[in-house]
Image: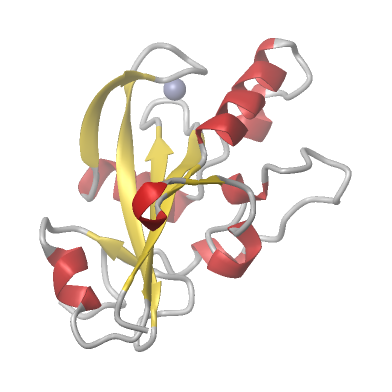
Length: 161
Ligand SMILES: [Zn+2]
């Protein structure tokens, strides 16, 4: 299987963020390009950036009726496909539909990888990819396979540069 076949998410980066006044601070949900989502999370020990606060903000806006369901449940078809075929299950209930558990989809960005990232499908693949690369950025996205809710969960950098 080449990197351009099933499991990659090369179309995800083609999406355009909405107008700036719409859902400020939630760009992490709209595009997975690393340069677009930096600065929206909290830096944790070990270089992990945590997006829980931004996520809670989006969920709160939805519960107050300020965001419509179609605005928060807008997973790209490639992301939905990855949620079904290349994800890690969790015990966490979807905050939007509360009918299904969310799953985690992992993307890696780095030199010699597609510009829109590579979807990680196997355990140990991140460690393998980070070998010999100056820098590898890894993004973990939570997705609800039922209602298409999606939000960036965390990101971290690997590599020697
Ligand atoms: Zn859901």
